[in-house]
Amino acid sequence: MKRLYWLSLLLIIFMMGCAGPAAVEPSVENEEAGETAVSTTANSDMTTYTNEEAGFSIALPADWTTVEASTEAFAQMRGAAGQNNALTFLTDEYVQALLESGLQLYALNEATTALNSDLPVSLKIMRLDAPKTMSLEAYVTDTATQLEAILELTSALEQAPVMLGDDEAIQLRYSMQMQTDAGSKIEVHNTQYFLINGSDLYIITLEMGQDLVDDYLAAGETAVETFTVSGG
Image 1 (cartoon, rainbow, N blue to C red):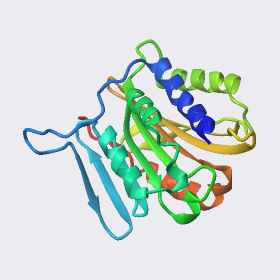
Image 2: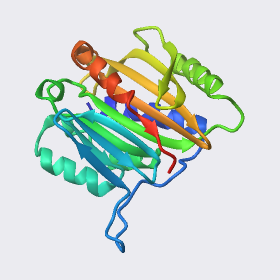
Image 3: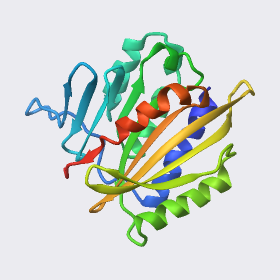
């Protein structure tokens, strides 16, 4: 499985290179003030995650766990999961690469069915410098063209405008085939969202095994639609 997740990470780094360096460092706790820029508000069905420093909020189903962008938070997540095979890919090397890519939030669906899949349902939110020489539509179109060239796609790339909060965004949907270390192949579904607000580019990636799409895609996309830029 390690190779599969590194291929997934390469997609993130590829998009980061297209846009530019990370706009902000991973959020960390303010030790002097004893505070953090991250807060959560929960009800019976949803948990709203707010990152004031990175300037966004999102509401996720209650059975998702969120990890802010710090090595300590990922270590706590792995410790709580124990020997769960679904999280063995979260090595120190992989986590560090995620953090350097501009990651602001990592979320994982902890439903038993999802965790038992070859590829669990996850959500990654990145914040990068917005491209200075092209519009959002041009950037996404260029990204889609390059993805078609480097990936083993199993479906056509679907591109559509969407609204995330008060901001216009573009959604990309596609499925692709990846090979595991054991030599077997797995089909992966990605729904990605691209949004520019001021000088910031947000990229949201909802990823899961194709076998989970019928049960988890609609809820995941509904959760992403709650994403709001607050202006950090």
